[in-house]
Image (cartoon, rainbow, N blue to C red; front, side, top):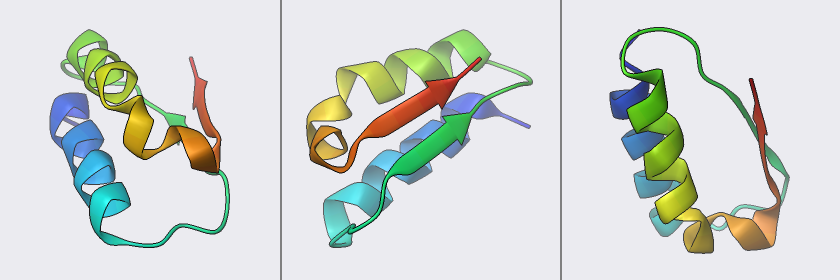
Length: 55
């Protein structure tokens, strides 16, 4: 899986949807470091909903 694409989708969804549950993410595959960076840089949209990244 392309982790950067998945991470971008998570960020875009968090911007549009009123999340009421914690977000748990485990990225493994192509571009995993880019995906983690995208989530970290954009964590302000997800942080209030407790972003948990598993490695």
